[in-house]
Image (cartoon, rainbow over the protein chains, first blue to last red):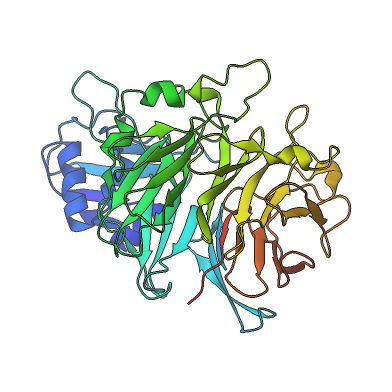
Length: 85
Length: 369
């Protein structure tokens, strides 16, 4: 599926839009990390919690659980929260 | 000079006379870089502890003096907690220490919240030092999740005894000073003689706030400490710190962040006092910036403000942001919370400003290629 990458994470992907696959958001982020090592830990901490200032949207709707199911036609958007003023 | 700031890192390369400096940077512009350290064992490897305001913490590594960087494959991180328990999360890596000369590739890292981590492969992968992080007294020492400094409780001042790679010291804000004789498997607090904030019990470890602890290379049995409550010296095998800051001028006091030791003379050490009165402004006392030096192990102190602003200097120097080189005379380097970089080629007698308008400086390490 299509994953949109915010500018702070493009040092990993070099692209605004990349492909990743998996049946859940957690699986998609694990796949992203296989393709772009280190990217997941910048977004998800060691207790598998989303970091406080990173947001995940699926088809335009914010997702709060990494266990959220996904289908191959879904579009995942990762954004940096508007928490810096 | 390796300069870590709130908005990136810079390398300042000096000529042989330490008079002119060539700037290389920014590296990691926009990253909060807490520490940037050169490996003295190969003089090529640099490690940078970094995060951003939004993204999680990581460690970057360069083996060509900063021309190229790679990210740690496994940065410092606490273990995943069992189901139903709340696990700890590294907010940022705060402190980096190269391991013993006989152990190339070994590094230690201190984090916020307090955690000790070790790398055996030059900073590519990091493992928690369980003997410390899972110590039965860990929560008693650290005071729990609410303890520590306003921007997060910190583990810092990781020291490896140059005579023995198994002999370690560390400091925690808050949590006291601790020693291990077995590579970090077991730990003993060393806080006797240290004072805590008035009205609190010094027997409680979490009230202890060492800001910076340094071991003298010329006498590894001597340590100096700048603490939240004074300047201290410890001569091993004694385990009792002596408050040598009582000999500082009363109007200046003995509060500050950094502690710097001389590479060859264990009786010489430098501090940079700050205002720790009332609400703790953490600025130069009375707006008058100055380092102080002792040449007699803390029995007396002398003001070193040549070239520094004599008034309206409302900044201070953080605990990693002052260091000494191995030159003769010793060169001193400091970075301010106002983004200025200063150096002295004569052990602090005269200071010159090397750079202005940098972001808030968190760390300045003197490094020799």
